[in-house]
Length: 297
Image (tube, rainbow, N blue to C red):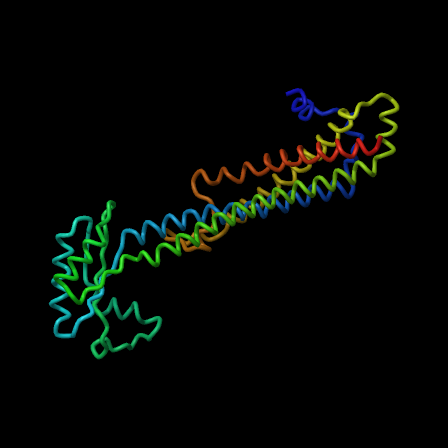
């Protein structure tokens, strides 16, 4: 507590030990600001990936599709039979057969708008929307196999798993990048503190001659570099949050890039970065100062 109070209050005589300007000061401010700016985007990527994974998982888990693969003269009959089976299946909220226009719209990106569905053996698609509890896919497959032999159920499981896994890995990647950025800040502050200590070796020797303790000298460096990292990272976070806020939202159903940002309480997460950078700078400078002062004896 005494160290924290001394850090906040400062000592104008001890502060003179560390040069207020120069290469190390500019390096600390710039790198901490740049790293904080990049960390904001890493956190935005991580949080957006988490939301994307949840949305993909929920949407694909609530939907399924049945393909009616049957001769043309049996297709309508089996479609009706499949709809009757779905109407009595627990967990199915709604089921409907897609129209020719809807199926043509689905195939248009691959085959064009003029695809003649009536001349091609295109299966009839039935769209299923499940309730919150979902339905028993295995039991439904058995019923369809017995009553509608041309029906093939696709519960989107093979699509959902890799998409959700990819989004979750992106979220992990975002947090990993944020941790690497914090590590880079620690390394940079350590190097800058070592350079400042080496440049002020003669001043430190004089301070020792007049009775200054190593803890007194170290606190001066810790305070100056911690405040520099705090100021630089605060500026970087402000610019990063502004840049994220200015990105397009994509409306009510944003995609991956247009949905990159913070929502709700997520906007408070970047505000912790300056405190994290300051804490990292404090620890790194204290470690560097203690080692450097031992070598300067």
